Image 1 (cartoon, rainbow, N blue to C red):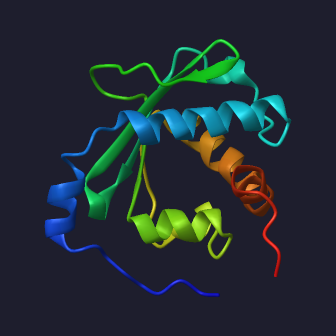
Image 2 (image 1 turned 45 degrees about the vertical axis):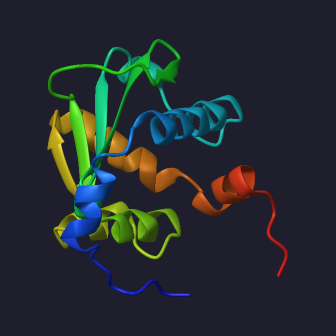
Length: 146
């Protein structure tokens, strides 16, 4: 199944940007930490320790901010600029998760924007590319029967 090219209307972003970020931030951090524990996300956490991240869903005008502390990710809010910001429209993040597009293709087609620490961005992009997202989907949602 190929996802259609959709950009959310601006009014949607105005609504979504007013929603609390705690529930999706908690979910994302919980999934990342679960993947670390199960070795589905093979990361040298010393490279991320003390670093602040932001995922910005452009067309929804929604930001998820989290950090890395020692050997895990934390959903504790932070102020100031993140060390790394990954920005894309929601559909492009979905394409990456569903493996319709890899992070390199999205980046070179200017659909995935990476801002901040260049080395951290490269490490993170390569880490995202190494994840078996279908396995992640099964872990989160359970095995889907056809």
